[in-house]
Length: 349
Image 1 (tube, rainbow, N blue to C red):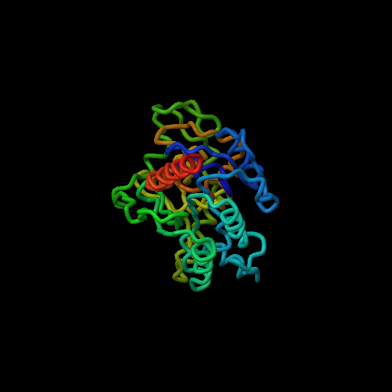
Image 2: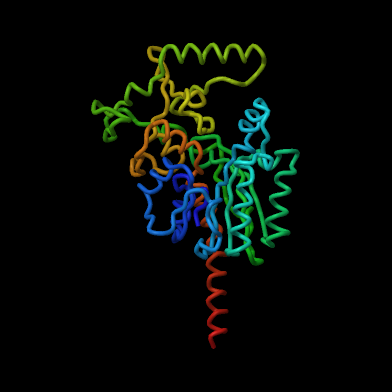
């Protein structure tokens, strides 16, 4: 089942090992639009998981969930503190959504699960939030749990650290440390996701224009915004802060793409030389940056506005990372499926 599904990054990863999705839940209507444009949804598709009766969810072997991270992320905690709002499990809207996962795990007892969240989840509230999560998964629900922080920089040209939590219902020989992560220093650069702008790529309206498939001028930031960003960086540099924009060349690796990218694109701006202001990534480049499309491909359907597309890719998981974890988990998942079939045959006999 695909819980807090977003635009299907988890599903795309697990379909690579033969997974078949039987239930999807995603509350955002625009993310639903993108998800349905790219995946078959002839199964139960729910909106807010809090409105779903556990018994109505089909039985499933694997639960996948990138539960909302804003209550635990560094940016989310900072924002909520500044507004005098609670965060983590005290956040009544989003923080309690982990317990929706626990509710489903307790009722259906799937063979395995994979959860994803921001790296800061592990240290949030002096580690108490993560301890609570592990306590629920291990002691209350009885799953054998392992976790690992992985930087997607080994797979895509983006510095993106996330924590992945794997759980199995039965004892097995799964070891998260067996996941081989390519050398981070030898990972891809932005040239692998950017439009080449030399005519070697078919143009794609509205992201590129027919002449040599050049990037549409609308992605070049205005003089006003560029002046503001330079002033903002200068002010914070004087204070010794690290805030500012991220100006990238084709041979660079980007900062983390976030859901706020639609606001000003500051974290990832592509250098276009001294004669021209830098530009934002196009949504197609974001699809490649998150691994939904491979280098040079434009297969993932983006039916929404640029604003919504930026939010969706910024909130997503990195598909190649999920594929690697799925591959590592697959041996144990299939072993448990076989054992279940043998058990059922013995009972029938």
